[in-house]
Amino acid sequence: MCSLGLVEATRTSTPAQVVRSLLAMQGQQVSAVPHAIAARLSTQGPRETSGTDAAAVWQAFASHQILRSWPMRGTVHISTREDHHWLRAALAHRYGPSRFTDAELTRSADIATEVIARTGGATRADLRRAWEEDGLIDPASEDAQARRRAFLLRLHIEGIAVGAQQVAGEHLIVDATQLPDADSSPVGVGVAFGQANHDAALAQIAARYAWGHGPVCAADLARWTGLSVSVSARALRHAVEASASSPAGTTGGIAIGPLVWVRAVYEGDVEVGVELCTHAPSATASGTARTKHAGGVGMRGFYVMRADLLDILSENRQEAEALHYLPSFEELHVGFKNRLSLTDAAGEKLICPTNNGLFRPLLVEGGRVIAVNPVNKGLLWAQDIHVTEDMDQRVRMAIADMRERLGVEGNGS
Image (cartoon, rainbow, N blue to C red; front, side, top):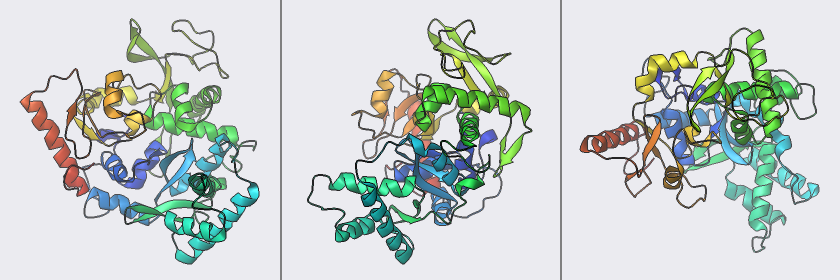
């Protein structure tokens, strides 16, 4: 809760700073993005814009401060203009080859570039129509949908286009070549796979992920980025080592300081907390069960987090354990491989009942999911929760407060 910007001590004042603090955040459901960002906006001090938190988010998209794309693992994420290209370039090698020819992909990109240049921002329908008119897509064919997705994904992976301002509930696809390029990365020139600073870029990704999500393990980073566990383990080790030898700095207003290793504390087989490691874990470390990976840190029970996180938790525990109303596709849930600290198998089923990737907004208290709030269905409580009148009232007030901040009417997220 604390590292993820869900307490005032780690909240920030603008949508771009919120996104930057996490490096990237889920953007799968367009309507959930303002909620995810608003939950992390400071409620104290002056605001840059007037109006609702949702309006501030859409303005950040309109000004291209934050953007929507596929920087990693084939899932839509939101990133900042400064981080977009280098993050994309560092992870692009994790996408497999397309089933369509290079000539088809190149032609689709050329057509899209023409449409975007002419319109200043294209809808998916605009691009689909142009591809169909050119003969690249036969709308009656069985592979029409696959072609549309492949052509669109190519635009994002290659850094040609990106989602920006929203019109009629859809992010327009705009020219991405006007953004800071991959060579403006925090680690310098050459971040793509096989280039000189690729490993340094992966360490930077690991550091930013651990800072904004920690405690995290190699398996968490692997799931979040699409990298292998062994590469993720090595990146985390490099991130911790680099943070110890470099002075604390800032990235767009987000302070990035030292990272540390922590070890899980167990009661039986259940993790109940963490304790600081006096030394970096190795493949020969005693204690928990482990599997050796490159870098020697892909073992169970070892995590990386910002060095001051336990102090932040100690000073903000009451707020961290308070009631939080969070959106579907919330990073607290989808940003990790192991979610047992948040909910159990029954809770996972409550969040995503059909295993189709469609998640429900969450109510979290004491760090655990107590209910979900599916659109137009009302509250559904976790099976082990004893619902009192006071609890029901507090939950409904939390939902109402967030809706007011977002300017949402009815049972929406």
